Image (cartoon, rainbow, N blue to C red; front, side, top):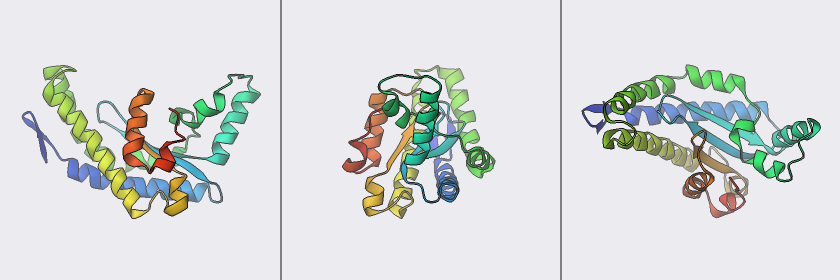
Length: 195
């Protein structure tokens, strides 16, 4: 438990639930896309700590997305690169999202979110307790991804070097996404990343 002002958040339980939910999500994604080559797994976190969602994308999946955009008349020169690193444009895996929403990780996040909301209401966006609680939530997510990576969840050896793992906010700037990618990945993975 971590004290955030007068409130306490159980980040350890959240992290354990998050790791379990991510293991399940990655297994589902790999099963659904057997034979395809994953190039990214992204954990998207809410700015107010009330949800997390893991998604991944394969080379084949992003090629289908790019082809769809092109067939709809999109002629943007950098479309391929933009879509490749845009989790919001990855194919939605509804079952993975629904299973993650039903997992105990959601209850753990909700408990943290209620504390965060109280701190926000009491202190505002610049309040030290609020900022600390949000940072600790992000740290718990980061630590979970690092532990899962050490288990080999995202691949090992050459396979892992071709996969970018990241933790992002929905509307986060590219520089922040790159900084987090550097913390979570070997150099071979993040050097091709262009958020």
